[in-house]
Amino acid sequence: MQVTTLGIDLAKNVFRVHGCDARGKVAVSRSLTRRQLQMFVATLPPCLVGMEACATAHYWAREIKKHGHEVRLMAPQYVRPYVKTNKNDTRDAEAICEAVRRPTMRFVTVKSPAQQDVQALHRVRQQLVKEQTALSNQVRGLLAEYGLVIPRGIAALRPALSKIVAEQDNGLSGLMRELVLDLSERLDRTQQRVRWYNQRIVQLLHHDERCQRLAALPGVGPLTATAVVAAVGNAGDFRSGRELAAYFGLVPRHRASGGRTVMLGISKRGDCYLRTLLVHGARAAIRNLERRRDPRSMWAGRLKARRGANIATVALANKNARVMWALLTRGEKYCAAPHPAPDRAAPDGAEIIRTGN
Image (cartoon, rainbow, N blue to C red; front, side):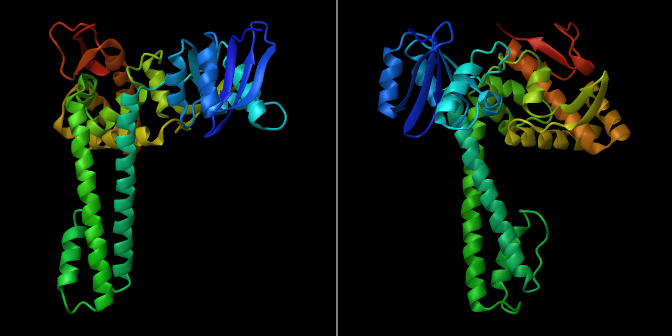
């Protein structure tokens, strides 16, 4: 029997494969090592290969594609309903093989090495920011036990620490001064690394025309633009801007039954890091509404006055996500001001000008 559909349960060393023929009968079900899996897919006739979008999935998808196979990645929560009885590697591979053949299944786009490089850069920077926050909170808490309270904000911390270490009559012992000095040096090194990563991200922005077009949006900077391009690529796998906003978790949840629909809060699905960047960028844009008199700012100002700053912030982040989809899929440039001869009118008076493709 020739395998037409193959499900692979990924792991570090031992992989489980489950293959079916055109009639759905089991053709192969076995465990393979890393080397055996590479040899197995190389000798297998071209077929449909399904895997869960988990650790190492994008690497294996690229490697398997080299042998002429069609590879599709699926979110693990969409595969779970197809697992029968007890969960084990065999049942997982069988469920993956079953789920990948469903016509309504949603798939994850395979990322290129360049996209993973940018994502890795963001992940390392994010970890450094967490370390910086942890060090800041620790030194503030330790000094508060001695009656030394530092003003809020990372900008006020460094000069305050230098002043505390230099003073001799603030009640700190010699041991405590050494600890504070060591924490201050660690904080300086962490801040220097964060600044280096920020500069590297800005360099990536200047070398990618897609990122530059996204960064023209109010509330979108180098961090958001590069992170979005690394996560979604050209956004062509999303049918509309609303789907991209839903991918970021910026659309409301709802419950519908018996013809009655109840709208809830935003779903908060998808990548928390991307959603955080979009919301924080929108919050910064909301604060500067008075400086801008374009239709988008006027709309956000009216919404802020009617529903509050938080709801207006999320609504603006949602709108930015939809405009991003248009910019990435159509190869167009964003222009906030009205144009004498608009190529296509965008929502709320914003304009998108076609620049290529």
